[in-house]
Length: 293
Image (cartoon, rainbow, N blue to C red; front, side, top):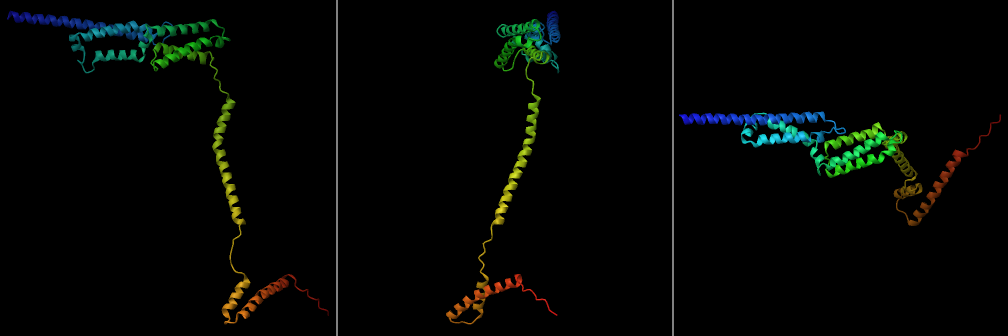
């Protein structure tokens, strides 16, 4: 009975010690998470030495170390990992790590931080040129410094497929706004006359094409219609004398060929004399003599 009591007391003490240890680790994690959130919030806008990734690297590393210690402890991981429906501890840590990853902060510390250092030097040189140069000559004198800085950023963007440190991205974006909008050194003014002319041509082009096509088609149809009207119908109808001759031959009894030929030759002559007499009767009517009383 005494041994059982001793084992019970020992297990209670062990559980209490382990619980106290896990709570300590949990409190340390919560404290480091708080410090990281405070740092990222106060350094949300990189400016000068006030940088999101550069200023909060230490807080992020301490937070990550505290979480790893908590999860590596088998007893603590059983208590705080997948122990509740929300899985608050792991979910909170994942969200904060996601914030760091979305900012591509690890890119700032590539090659022992040389990338961020080189870009910062270019940015400081550009800002120094702006502060020491007369505003009238600023766009000319500081153009080289701006181009070097912009080219460095473009090469970095190409090498990393757009995964550039948030500090570098934000500083470059603000520098471009300063150079183009505030200082107005970006010569991209649009000639309104040329612009309006191009818009007018584009707007009128469909109408011009439509009416030109309509005019061409109309002229072609008119020309084709004129050719049809000028063509006289080719009729193979027999003449009047031939019709009369055929009628006489069909009605008369059979006669010798010589008689038929002579009669056939007389018919055209009679038709001709008839036409001439009709013309004389219609056009040259004899004048009536006045009656003498």
